[in-house]
Length: 426
Image (cartoon, rainbow, N blue to C red):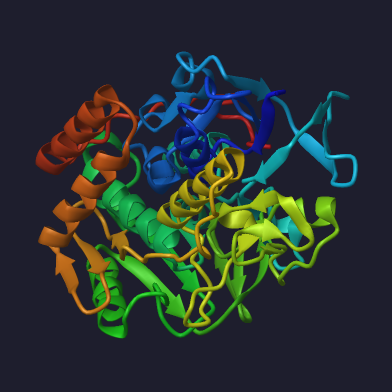
């Protein structure tokens, strides 16, 4: 019997959970071989990516080499490459390098990227936050803004450097706004001589009526008050109409701001286009109840690139726990198929709760009937994230960094790296 070849595209939460769920199949019967393809050589813990962008954590504390994770799994081959097409009829995957792989089962866990709602020209001046490169770009721009303000003689330009605009008030936007405000108001004041960083403006812009719309209204209201207590200006109910290198326009009001961060929307990968199957407005592949692509029983689509509906008709949220549950479910389906056993029933999502932080000592948690806010929620949030980190070393270093910042107020990852220091940031 020949080996069953499972090709997994994407080394995020869903892809890794799937590969982990197939452990032990490599030596049974004809065996299973797994090829894991990703455009980057590391798995990224995205929920803490904003902490790299805001000088709390370093890149190595939330990312791990994929090859290292599977060094002891000889049935797993890791390839650094970018998929640019799938031939479902021939059952092949094409890489940009020209390499073509045959598969018996294909799992697309290719994630999502930023969505600018038809204004992709805004991306250079308003970067999103999905990769380590995004995080270090934002961190560099934030730190350079203070440095440039320190040597700027024109008061209007100086104020623009000291104005930070975050577009989108979901968890990422709120978390970014809170940490940047704390950085400016509590960490940096003693370090600059020509500027008062406490006069920094952090503007959080949300087109909808309230921040954190996925949370209950009382938690959303608490989050806004907590942000405003930190000095964040919260603007709701008006969309952004323009982003330039000089600032952001909200409705018809222009805000001079040299640093803009985009946290307003996402667009799925090209998985649906590769397969020629229906997609929703965000480009997510509309999958069957067993997470297969319509009409393609050997192709699964999971994570942020899949549109999955819950039993109550609501969409499964694009968060890490959902991707992990989908990866684990598909692993069970593949195991059942290979062993000739009945497949499990339709995928059912179990919502474990929604969490978001506001600064270093406040958070909100929504478990449905059970809700929590304040410092206790912050500690629960921290423990949950430390638990899901990979490896004892990462858990220890992240916990130590958080403890140090909590006690001292000092951020340790404030190095300006990559390309220029004082030249224009391209």
